[in-house]
Structure formats: C-alpha cells, structure tokens
Image (tube, rainbow, N blue to C red):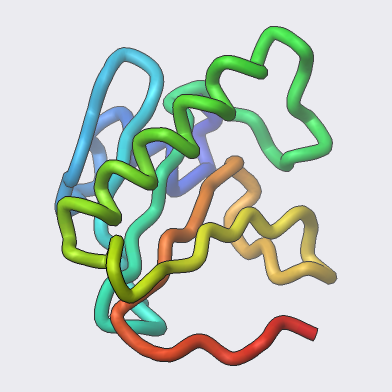
Length: 114
C-alpha cells in the first residue's frame, strides 16, 4: 500500500466506496464522478502505478480485470447496448490517480474516440 494513494486507501478500507465486486486480487466500485449512467472502476489491490508498470507476472491479473469488468457490465444490463472499458496511462492520456484502474462506462451513446 502507498500511503498517499486514494485507491490503496479504498482497498485498505480507510475510504468507503460502493463495492460491486471484491476478491483476493481485485476490487470494483462505483466511480464517485460518473461521466455516464453506468461508470465503475476495476482496480488491482496491488499498487501498480500505470499500465507501463505491469510485469509479466501481472498477465493473469489484467485478464481477470477484463473478465470481471465484462461480468459486471452484463449484470448492470449493458450487454445489449454496449459499454466502454478504458485504461488511461499517464497524465497526457487522462490518468489522474496513479494506481492502475479500468473505467467501465455505459448507459448512453458514446462518441467516437479520436
């Protein structure tokens, strides 16, 4: 755990969240500043600052993040209409919290990425 990381504090229970899923390696919770009707995050419990900091040993973890995010999107009824999974890497790409996390966004028409 990194002392000044808000996501590490959420994992540790120091900051509350609306949990959607939790296992030994992952935590999923509602985004506190949603940009769509459905917007949640899937994070590893291990502090990994950016996608560039992922190592070969994290391959299964990344697969689990994708799987859990898809399962939760289905549970929230997004399967038929679609949803977006996003991992921002570094500040220029929009990463604000430097703890690896995946945004899952849906419930409205998405603009094309460009």
